[in-house]
Length: 163
Image 1 (cartoon, rainbow, N blue to C red):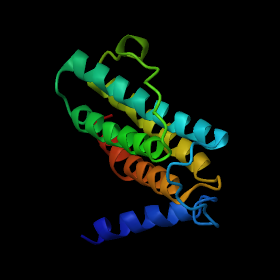
Image 2 (cartoon, rainbow, N blue to C red):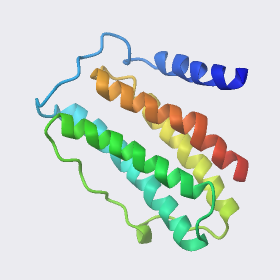
Image 3 (cartoon, one colour):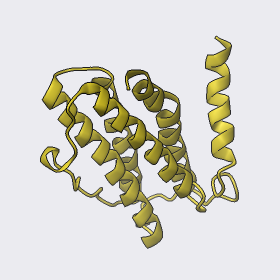
């Protein structure tokens, strides 16, 4: 029980120390368009989430409804939906996925796929660490921090257990 309480707190402290988030954040805009620099960051985040979705869907296509991929696919869809809402709040349309099941890696075993999941989640966490160093609007900071935290506390451990 103590671990459950402390782990999210540790993740929040880790995100707070990343940089731009929490340091004079810009307010959340409503219907004001999309700043080009922010557009690049949002596109990077959503395409990374789409890529994970597509890889995990490929694993499910290849091996059936195996864990942790079935759960992780749903989680990645929530992550990309959260980024999509950031586009919508700026009266923009989120880009379509650049990924197809045929264009992502496939694996010879679930264990190999899990090891690739570990690497992918570590890359995702690093990406969000980098993005969170920018001076971000509050809503973007919150979504990026939430996605990062889920990858660190949930996705990565799930893949580590099965690899």
